[in-house]
Amino acid sequence: MRPEKSYTIWFTQRTGSSLLCKALESTEVAGNPWESLNMNRIDELEKMENPQDIIWERGMKDTGVFGVKFGHHQPHFTHLINVLRKFPGGNSCKTDMDIYNNAFPNGKHIFMSRSNKVRLAVSWWKWIQSGEVHRVMGDPPKDVDVSDKYLYNAIDTLVANCVLREAAIQELFTTSGIIPMNIYYEDFIADYEGTVFSILDFLDIEYDDTVSVSEPYFDKLADDVSEEWVQRYRKERQEGWQFIGW
Image (cartoon, rainbow, N blue to C red; front, side):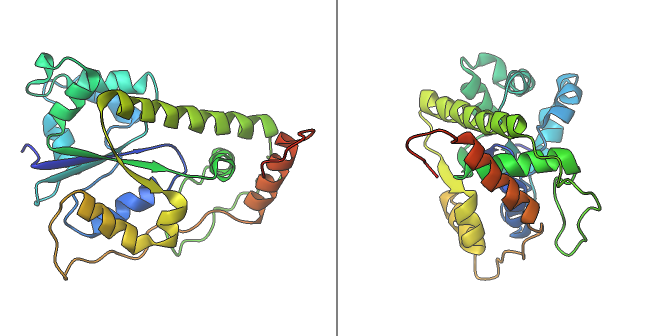
């Protein structure tokens, strides 16, 4: 079934996008905005003759609202466009975003970011080292010690990586005339429920007093090791600078 409304959460790693998706899903009026277009599924989808059936089903509930989150990077985006070109009407589209918008009709866009790129990169590197991408609220921490896994070059590379990915997303919006709703991790955490309702309003999704937002599904992963790495990186990165940014 073709969606009546669509929205995409564009994100980079460690910005709280999974937490946001769980919160939106819990309202039961905003579809199922999960990462159904990630790299692990693209090869499978490219082989399908009618990929729209499974994609729409994954991201939509009975309300007719389709949601998805997408972490933009290449060549993943190009492969995604090849999949979306197979949707009805896709071959007549001229640009990549025309193809994208044809696949997800009446679409709106949310840009999820994290202002503090140092903390983002530290969280990303810590996840790579520990294997703990998420922790469900109430579950015990993964039993792994990463305190000796700090690596300046790795964190510095991840800072640059997230900056360039966000630049690519913004360039896509700018060239396509898209004005997204910007959500920052720090603001989302400070106003969890209010952020979700502001998104529903942005998406023009009707809801009443019975709609609620669940408690956060995932727990915070930052700990003393994270803070030590943050402070160590920022000092090493600015060593010898005349004007210190932070």
